[in-house]
Length: 280
Ligand SMILES: *[C@@H]1O[C@H](CO)[C@@H](O)[C@H](O)[C@H]1NC(C)=O
Ligand SMILES: *[C@@H]1O[C@H](CO)[C@@H](O)[C@H](O)[C@H]1NC(C)=O
Image (cartoon, rainbow, N blue to C red; front, side, top):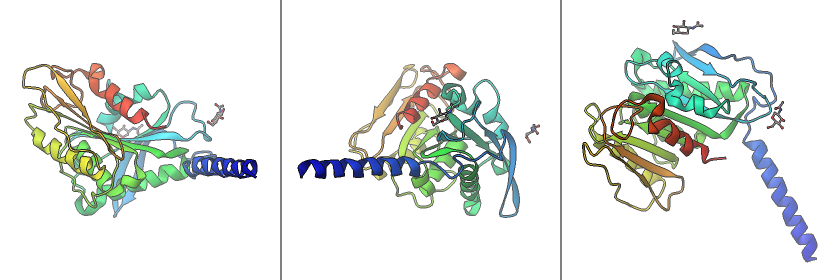
């Protein structure tokens, strides 16, 4: 009797695990993709919107991949995120073909998100990718610097259920926050000497997700100016991981501990990738 109950329970468990793993894969899994890496266009509210897609080398259509949006800063563009020495803020090199990357192009080189049009744009790309490529729908991410951080924040406000985590690099609330009450894993970093978007703006964004994630209140210490230090605070008791780094620097996406522009040697790519990679 006990044995049959426990084997029944085991059977149910296996079925649940199986259905769960099937459920996590998007409808593009198993299909031969029609999308190819490179420039794409999508019409949103009558406007032609541009984006760049990077499909991993040796793409395997039955493997559910991570999906990562890299959003550009003000005056930047999809090309600035996709090219240069640190594509996708350095994450593309670290991902080693384990993630599908997309760099969308904002209107007027920014993310004003008027009437929610940029949320619609990103959501349309997300659906297009889901339908054509094999994505693990529990492993979608967005990151960006400055205006791109603001847009990642806005995405977390509106679409937390579709994304696993966001990383906001020196962001602020510039792209709105519709909804804004759902939990989502949150990585934030901000310079104590930020002369463009003062650090208090970064604290405000962080505190929304500290609250939404139900974390215990905690003081997040920040390094003194010119201390050449950074301090990371990991919040406790959160529904989803929530962490914040304050560094001794100005308005920069890829700083070192002393606040210099360090490119691929910045702590940012390694820390963000570690944060995104903790989810399996
Ligand atoms: C992709 O779009 C960018 C920006 O519009 C342009 O500079 C580039 O030449 C395009 N690349 C290709 C291969 O068409
Ligand atoms: C494709 O991915 C599936 C699922 O992860 C794996 O079982 C299979 O071995 C992969 N095929 C190749 C050719 O790598």
